[in-house]
Amino acid sequence: MMTDWGPVIAAVVLFIVLSPGLLFQLPARTRVIEFGNMYTSGISILVHAILFFAILTILVIAVGVHVRVG
Image (tube, rainbow, N blue to C red; front, side, top):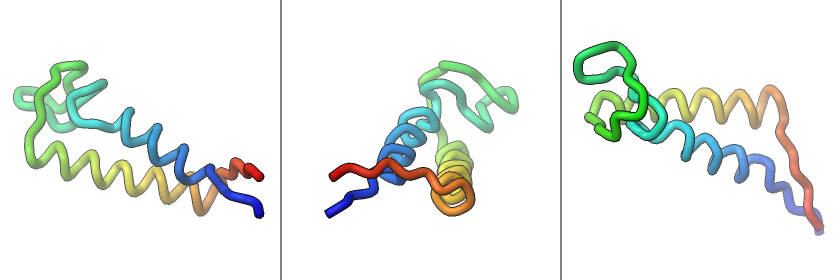
C-alpha cells in the first residue's frame, strides 16, 4: 500500500512558516507587515489562514506535490 505524504508535509511546513508573528505578521499593529515581532491579532490570524489555504490548495491541486512511501 502506497501512502502519499506530500500534502501532509506541505501543510506542516506552511503551518510553521505562516504562523502569525513567527517570521512575519500581515497586517501588523503599526505597519502593513512586521518581521519577527511574536505578536498576533484576530485579523492577522484570518489573513494568515487565508494565505495558508490558498498556498496549500495551489501546492496540492495545481502543482501536485507527492511524496509516496510504502
